Length: 145
Image (cartoon, rainbow, N blue to C red; front, top):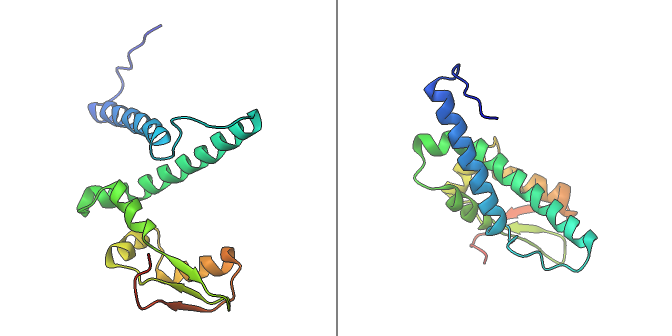
């Protein structure tokens, strides 16, 4: 059965169309960016596990996209793939003594982190909380890797 909602404004219809495009792009991301072209697993449990982890990854990507959308539309010179590339460049090393070192955060990375209400200190806090390292933190004077 087909229906037409005449109560929608042209802006609402355009918004629905754009959301449809986002969903299609999300499936494209599943296939290519999140490596879901082929499952390459040998058990049902492994299939379910890979699908679950990939779904969580897609949720996180969508969250980042929604969080940065207004900023990127308003004044950003770079795209969402460039945002992820920029964030991937944040590298951290744990020394044998447990000290955490990371490369300096670039201006672009700082701007991206600010959109989430975070700063360079947030990296140290997260590493201490989730990395299981000693609470020692120093920015590394050179870019790593």
